[in-house]
Image (cartoon, rainbow, N blue to C red; front, top):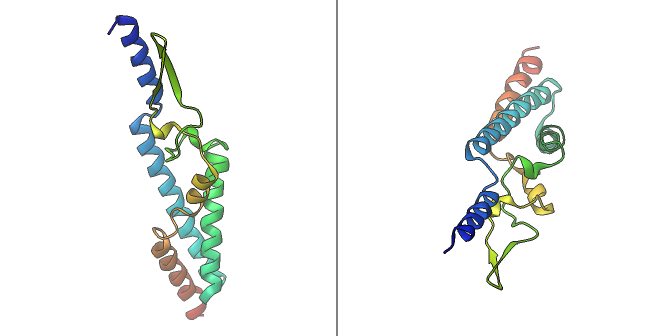
Length: 149
């Protein structure tokens, strides 16, 4: 393999590795922190307002959706593919031409763009992980405000 072909292959590999793993891990931890904090506050609000039964769980579902929408809109600046790894492949594969042959280079699937399915999955993520903290704060504040009147 010639030096020019090696350089070209290295450049293609660098373009395919568009995410720095430490930054991705940091972003994931920050999103989880925002979710857990926001949903704990939502549980407190549900308890103070005296929500019970399905009304409280509906409030939880709406709180999860609103929190995730705010993360996508505010924190990710409406371009989540810049900040989060997506399972969707890129829309156009990167191709190279060597000695008259066109070969397709596989791109890292993390470098795709957010599709509708990815966005929907992101909007409901954290639904089960944060349910217990929501219920904990919900029952605590309901008990403090309404039971011990």
